[in-house]
Image (cartoon, rainbow, N blue to C red):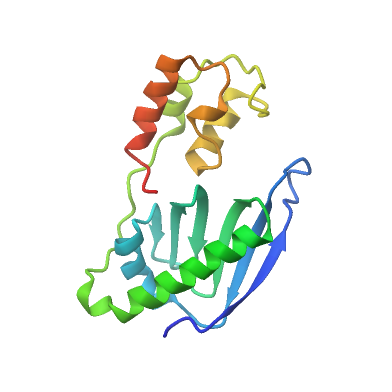
Length: 173
C-alpha cells in the first residue's frame, strides 16, 4: 500500500464569492510521486508535469490534480462528494502501485482543446445567460472542465453538437 491515508480540507472559492460549490485538498500521509506516471497510463491524464511532478485529470466531471503530497479537486457540490472522489483516488493509487510491474508508465500529456477553437464554436454574444461575463470566459471554463456545451443556452442544437463533437476528442470520463 502506497497511500495509507489523508486528511481533507474543504473550502469555498476565495476569488468567486458567488460560487455555489466547494473545493477540496486532500493532504496525503505519503508521497505518491512514484506512482504518477503509472496513474497517467491507467487513468488517462490530461496534463502530466515532470517538475514539479503532478498529474491533472478529468473524472466525475471534475478537474483533479494529484501532487506528491496533495490532491486538489475543483467544483464539488459538498464535502461528501469530495470524500467519495478522494476515496476512489486512494483506491486507484494503491491498485495502480500494486500492479505497476504490469503497466507501462507514461509522462506524456494528452492533447487539449484550445481556447480559440472553443470560442469559434460559441455564439459570441456575451449574453451572460451562462452566468459568465463573456463568451471568452465561458470558453476558458469549458477548457478547464467546469462547463460544457450544455451550459450555453443560446447554442442551437446543431452548434451544440458541433461543440460536443470538438470536445469529445479530449474527454476521458
